[in-house]
Length: 225
Image (cartoon, rainbow, N blue to C red; front, side, top):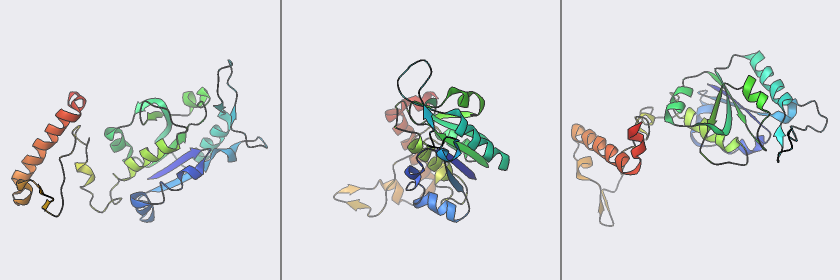
């Protein structure tokens, strides 16, 4: 998978993609992440990428021209399955969307900034809009990093145990069951006996029951879905 990220602050993405699973996935050739500075695609000698909005509202708006030039360049080099805009008023990201995106080959993610982007970008260039929650960040870079992480960890080969991602919370609209490791007893706190029994059928039954109980208690809205 190839992911191209368009931003006015590329340095914000240096750390998230330089460690852990994302770093290993890139090293193994499972994923490519390319970060592009939108400022390099403006014809303004001052590399200006924003301007005042028509209508006199507060804030600054990202200009359409540099975004158009950058996306056009990328699309001339390969086909893209999705061009995503990170925005607070997009569809809230979830595991189902991450699963879907992880099956694609090439995607572009545009990071919003300032008051947002010229709406013509959203009307004519963007194919999907995603939010990471009902709140506003200073820019779309951290949101893009969240989405990229959720996608890449699902790609076969990104993590050593590929079945691990399939048992994560939200895969079946359920929270995952509690997990434990050694020692079996610490400070008087014991691991449930069933997990030490070696009985795979009983362990699976316990995990299913715990998953349903936790979801009912903590996130009943997931059961409605």
